[in-house]
Image (cartoon, rainbow, N blue to C red; front, side, top):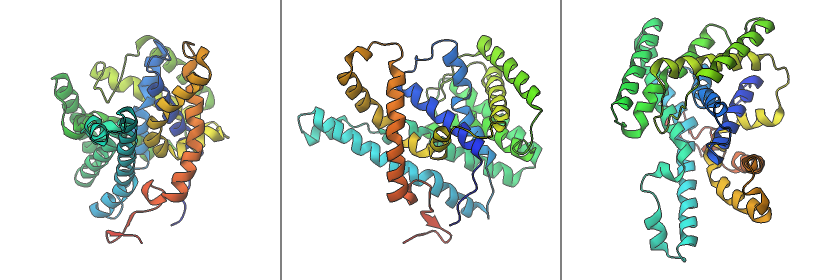
Length: 333
């Protein structure tokens, strides 16, 4: 299978996203207010936007579904299995080597064994919904339908309901995905405004975010008003897109993490607690330091590099590096 051509600044944007995801999982309050709220405007929405940039219909629904199963569902299953093993072993050690007790302490919901994988469930649903809209509706009506679905998802959450398999979150995420798809169709990947316009736009957006950002947590269904939920993330995403386009040589470490962000997403949760325990055991004075989360963040990201290497080398078909299912729906031997 030929290697896909990479766009460096897109991987850089993915890298920024995944670093923020890890940072917030280490300490949700580390950035404080309003800076934490400002970062939340694009932390997860930009992931959906970037996924929308590369949406394709492929050769019909079954080929499309095969691609998404290879790229999303197969890695999801791997990360859920790793999560189950991790929590079983952790509970076993903490339960005086009682297998029965370890099984009893494991969450019944497999996603809770690896919480960040909720994103993969939602991303798969968003892709399927958008495929159906694209297949059966004209372009303008697809955009309208996606917005209407987001209104439904938002209303469901405001009414106090959570749909099965995070389907309400998938509906809420639709506009971010559509924004990415439409940005590509409009040619914004190849061209952008003059550099001076980019800088002025970024400064204006930063000021707006500073004064008007509110908390966004898609997993826990914490949303501001409908208008603010989409306008502020859209502004911040487009601002970052225009700025990152101008970067000729993105930071290689961040770009690398972005390229393999699905592996970081699926594994970082298991590294945080053990590494934090080891670091604070060796350096107890850091435990109460306001910047201690940065130390943990650096160590977690550093460990991710050998983790990525191992997954790439030994489990490429399970981490979207090679196809698990090829055309014909047969398992590759």
